[in-house]
Length: 210
Image (cartoon, rainbow, N blue to C red; front, side, top):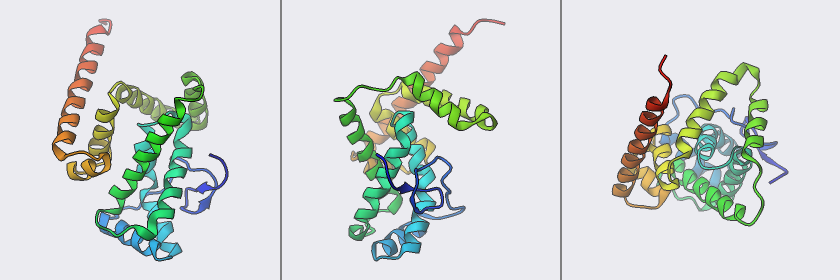
């Protein structure tokens, strides 16, 4: 998607970046309050809502989509959310509601990708590495390693693990985001842990002795 997007300061304008701010010590109740106020037309509340959630949305999508697609998908998530805010009633936390939208955006992208040629993964990683810059290279390499590790998980296990273990959602919140029972989320997270431990153990066994 091209054109306007969500900027790092929470305004609608340029592209979305991973450096979007997140409120320090902001609670779910505060975020939900901003979402409700934004739905009533409060522009300042809308900006605060975006600032408080943008980094986590980007991180969630980072583990569900290809590197070259994350910023566009984050932008699309907020465009859909802003259009839907007037109908948001606060029956769940705004953060949970927003992650549900992000998950749908990622799923729509996967379905759309089936019908078009894919960009080479190596090119995507190179572009992301160049954008990261030399000052952030070590952090980028760690991020690539984590993404590579989680990328080996089946999609449903990966999204459950990311939501609960990386983003800190409760099992109940993750169940709402993933549209499944809490027990299913617990099972997916447990199986994801088993898968990751097996991969790490296999890597340790295959590492040459020093």
